[in-house]
Image 1 (cartoon, rainbow, N blue to C red):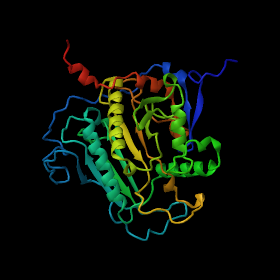
Image 2: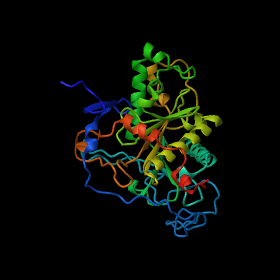
Image 3: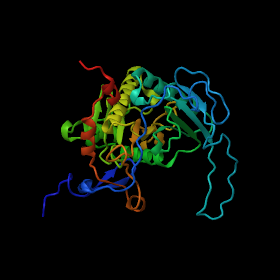
Image 4: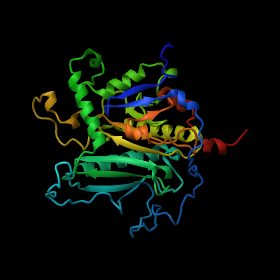
Length: 387
């Protein structure tokens, strides 16, 4: 029998954050494709579009008028998925298996830049830092409102991700409950700390300011210890690392993680760390665009402490009595659908819907391809003067 080779043989990888497995089938990268293709998203957009609902000075589809903003601009979503007040109490369930839980909250839209034709990949580091500052402001403002238990920052980029407008923007949804995915991650982070509180394996990675074992602190340091050429790290700067996670589902999925210290939320970043985060977001999205020389589609989401911490814990509290939010570790997910080219995307169907996620390209192969991409945007290289 041949010796097992993870670059050739099918295997499963475990995601300790979600407690789920992904099936990896590297031998399938050779299969032909005669399925659906997508039109690549155009990078040829005007700086201003008089028909765009998000451009400065234009009327939005909900009837409101945008100001002539010159930086980021935030407004309440005209078609919000959440409403500020939920009727209480909830109706009597039809059956114990058919319960209803009212949810209230707010949905904000954050326009990243007044120019219609820019994405994060084409913005300056200063522009992206302004977006981060706005994320922090909204997170703190919404997270301190009565009844808000969770704030989710995210961006859908590209028509194939369901984005209805190419103008650079993201959203922030604030809810009266913690949604399923971040709730699962928080449970896993707490369970890891409880399991490893006396473990020598984790003791070396304990931050003095966070004297508890942390799953993501330990994970990122384990990744940093791997050889760069065969590992999963794509980019590293003075405070953040970008890597294709061991358990990645999407072909070129990455995680953005702080690695010098434990950070629970964007609010905990100092100015130097915000600069570094802006830098790494620019470099990540440029590599994405350069991979297939297109405006690369993705969904991006910030996972952190559900809402800002308002006061320190009082007295000595047993570890298992601490709320799950105390174990939060800031990380940013990028989940892009493109697989083989600018026009072929991955589908989560069949086995993946009915059994468990599956991928062909290994995380190591994906990381190597992203590492090979330039940090100079391909459009800048095309327009650069030749000697």
